[in-house]
View 1 (cartoon, helix red, strand yellow):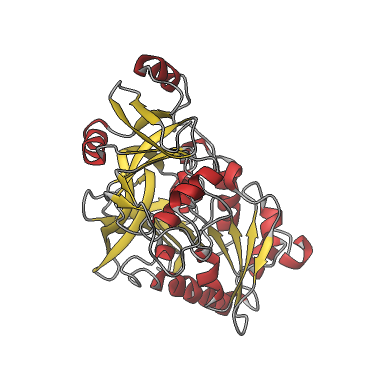
View 2 (tube, rainbow, N blue to C red):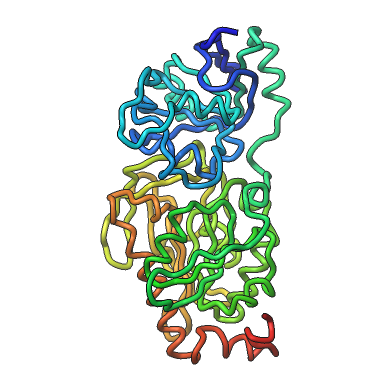
Length: 398
């Protein structure tokens, strides 16, 4: 087969695009979504939140800086397929070790190039994200369409355990250790524990199927839920874990999927966005400060919570702390106790992605301050007294 064989892309509504193979040859299927970032394609490809998704790049030129060994956000490429218009013929960057085409081929990722990605993106904006197939072996659009319509939809998919680690590991604090955090890996990106470690936090990264006993065994000052793929409404175990942690007063910080699961734990529903938020330069207002942040997003679901007023839950009062200025989607939640003190919070966007580039880094400092405040009211460990109130201590859990 020639290096760039003909390739076919078919959406589930029958819209068809033809181009050339890019990366591996063969067939692949997933949910077609588009990403607006002009840079950062290596981080996009290795973000586990894109598991089972075929990513359409809106920027026309992709691959200009090649692939390096410093920027991956996880152990592998997770996208199900890749769609670009004009791939770079020769990469040019001092850190580049190989071409994007070679890396996709090496990892078995089927892609297509030479596609009018502007037309494809406009179609997805109008019709919504949908199932898609890419093939270098099937030339009949109707035959490929039949295969596309036989694949599973993203709604109802529980995928976090497929991308999570199977064994816990520690990212040690840099310098003096100030706090210990249990971080549930639902598709965590490497820069997240790194940014916490920079703030003196020992980060125990735990598998997605961990229990409250597993969390308490590391004697944490706080609990963190990462980003991840799939439908939050299809997840039950992690919601129950989070509720158990909230009952014990353990400070919580969640991002992206962790924001959606926080919403579910607090009693809110979630819903699928028409085509989601994916890419950079997304304007979000922190309603607690009035500051507008330039943020990076990757989500197809959102929390269904009232933008105004507060909601009473068994764990305290909840308000929407952040909102997307493009479409009023909930971008953050805050949980406060009866005295109005912050106990837990989450954001829908990716503060570790360094959009802005530092607009959202304060959230990691806010988490540190939250754990410090809880430690001051609860003794040596932020949640020890809460654990004791339920007949156990963190030491006994360990």
